Amino acid sequence: MFKIIGKENLASNIRLLKIYAPQIAKKAKPGQFVVLMPDENSERIPLTLADWDREESTITLIFQEVGFTTKKLAKLSIGDCISHILGPLGKPTEIKFFGRIILIGGGVGIAEILPLIKAFKEKNNYILTILGARTKELLILEEKIRKFSDEFYITTDDGSYGRKGFVTDILKEKLYQDKDFQLVYAIGPVLMMKEISKITNPFGIKTLVSLNPIMVDATGMCGSCRIKVRERTLFACVDGPEFDADEVDFDELQKRLSLFKDEEKLINSYGA
Image 1 (cartoon, rainbow, N blue to C red):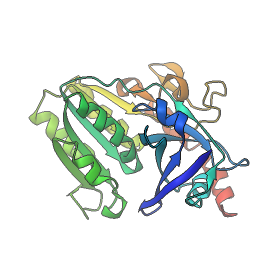
Image 2: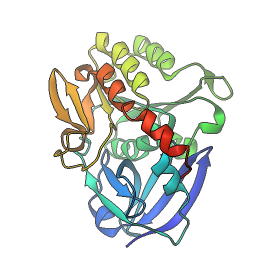
Image 3: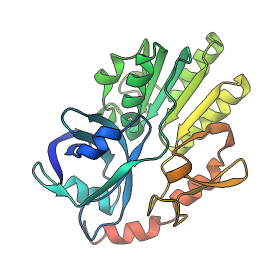
């Protein structure tokens, strides 16, 4: 049922798959994700919906080859089928008129910005977008995102494209220049989202982050994706994946994301 009808290599180790999934495409909303298994013997991994087309009955997933399962997924070709896809999951983003919004995407998290920026723009919000990557070769979806942005900035760690530095550098400047922003939305590495939260907190600006911790059953039963939010234990699969950045314990989240690093290295040593 979940046939791959399109595939692109967006950057080094970053892949795009367009998949026939009519029921998911019909109900998908910005901010939601799916959990999939490339084949019957695979682990389950969560991937945020990067796009969908209700008329074509397709969904688009963008992912980076970082572990055994994503490498296995990347080996599939057009015409192949994915064994299982569950979704759409998670609470969708509240899309409404806020006024002036800053959207920040880092690394492969840039893919998750696309459906959000399109939806926010439809509500006539003013959009300032900041994209960050380690190097120019790892930057994705620049033109697609740029056309929905009223202001658009790029940073690279090595200075190979855009401004040398980090997304937080531009964020600081813009918040000091213009205190009329009503919302900051960030998706990317945990450390990036943590630093963004530190910057926006003194300004009192509502800041949302999309979290993607380890997930297994995606129903809240297994507890693998638990995170600490304002000293409460919540589950990203059913309570998120979107949370108020000021309430998230990023240090605990970072530890949980590295929980199975040794096992992953061992599995990868045998080849996907």
